[in-house]
Length: 180
Image 1: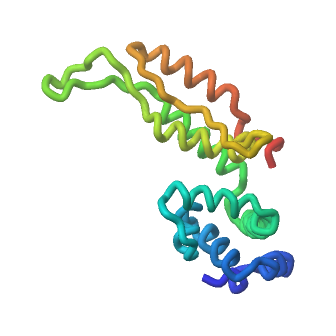
Image 2 (image 1 turned 30 degrees about the horizontal axis):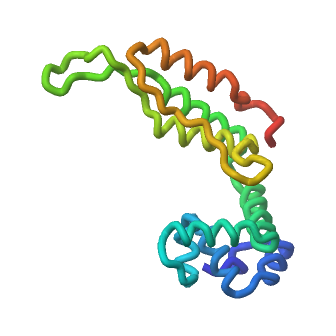
């Protein structure tokens, strides 16, 4: 993939031209959707392990020239997208609501409910992460990620419902313009 063949904005091309060849390749891997650590490895940086790759990726993404070029490209993609921010927010809220619905745990041997309840914590975390990113709440002042984790073990479904209602109630509604 050559980023210059995919962009419509001269501003994006100029930002990418200011990057070194290696930084351009790294940015292209990020734009393809690779995880940052994998993008470091794909770019050819010599790292001893995945942790070092992730650390190097963090350093690269903190560089003003790289982050600026990526931000410009992401903004261009967002402007040219047929998907609105409100659609994404609405879908993420719907997924979060569905994933936090309590379901009884069924005993595999007897087929009877055990009295415990469960919900899709992984799906709820992913939807919540999406909403937090859209709201600009995924970074603190130091740049560290923050995230609400749904790690709940309950015996009563009303506990799950109360937690879900509290979290969902604190989220902006899909038609809120404040995040745009």
